[in-house]
Image (cartoon, rainbow, N blue to C red; front, side):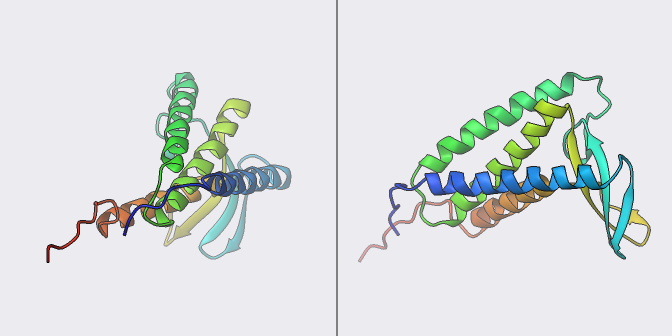
Length: 167
């Protein structure tokens, strides 16, 4: 299947924008609804909890003394630029640009928190049998789904160039 020119890459930016909006809106809602550290059970395996993460995924480098805020800010800006460039390129189908848009929206949502607050607001907590998954947010979810879609695309051979069979 030949690559289709990406004439409407702005729609992918709109999807990324929707992720940013949903992320920031839910963070604002939870910040207004809960006190820091407060937890509310919603289902037997799902809590809403207000926590702040000054590190990266799973609070990686959270206690590093403050330099990580600017390091992760620079990394998120660089990744966002690369993702926008990738979105402007032609794609074989809609899966890859959709996945890239999810990752971009999630990166920008968490970047906004990091720049304006100095930490990322997390509030979704899953647990079972006394084991708790680290709290996360809408941006983290979008990044996770986007990366999973990119991995799936790679595993199914979506990134490989298709060649015509010889007669």
